[in-house]
Length: 84
Image (spheres, helix red, strand yellow):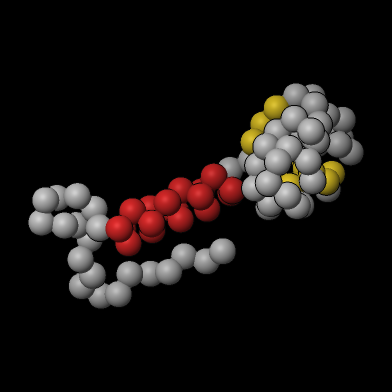
């Protein structure tokens, strides 16, 4: 997913002061990207336990050296995690 920049002189708020629909959507896009870039931390494997979107990272704080970082490869539920 890539973020779409606003065109120059875009209207960001309605006369009432409320954000425009486009600004609200843009903020949601940024929040989603930040959440994907921030690894989830927990103890144990995330498989079947942690629900996330594909590309989300997970750090197992109790893992051994070879089993620490997981990436959500597919699906929208709690399965689809792979050890990297």
